[in-house]
Image: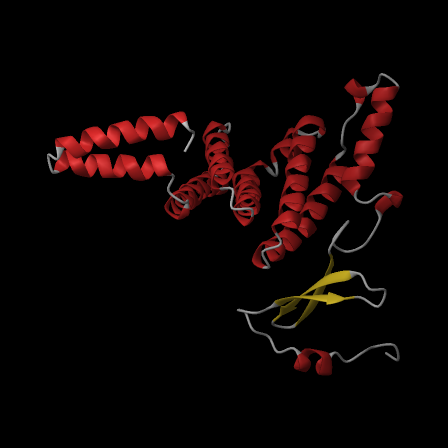
Length: 253
C-alpha cells in the first residue's frame, strides 16, 4: 500500500517499559495529549472530551447526545416513553471503555482532577443505563464494575484533599465511600462480589494510612500523655493533663 507508514523508528525512539509507559506531550496545535506505549505500539488520548477526539452526532460524547435527547423528551412531557435501545446501550458501553482506558492512565500519572472527572462521568453512565435502558440485561450490564469505579473515584477525591493537606476531608471522603460500597444493592455476579470486597479493603487501608499520616492535634497529644500517665499511676500529672485537655478543647486546639 502506497499510503502505509512504517512506525518502527517511532517505536524504537520510545522503547516499551511497563514501569514507564505513559507520558504527556503537546500536539501540533499546543493541546496536551497523553500517549501510552504498549508492547506493540503507541496509543494516544485526548486529555479532555471524548478520549479518541470524536464527536458523535456533533456532541462531546454519546452520553451528552443521549442526555440532550432526554432533556428534549422532558420538555415535551415524554420522559416516560424515553428509552435506550440495545444499539444505543452498546454505544455507551464502548464509550465507557474508552474513558476507563484513559482514567486508568490518568490515575497512574497522578492527575487526580481528571481521574475524578472521568470516573464520575462513567458512574453517570451506569445510572443513566440503569434508569433508561430498554432491556433489563442492558440495565445491569455495567453494575458489576460500580464498586471498582467508586473506589477509583473516591481515591482520586481523597488524594486531591491530601494535596491540600486537608486530612479531615480526605478521611471523610474515604469513610463515605466505604459506607456507599457497603450499602450497594447486591448483584449476583462474581466480578461484583470480588470488586466490592477488594475495594472495601483498599479504602480501609487508605483510611488507615491517612490516619497514620495525619498530624496529631494538641488535644490528641495530651490525651496520649494522659493515658500513659494513668498507666504509670502518675495521678498528679494525670490531673494536670486533664485540665490542659479541657482548656485545649475550649480553645478548639
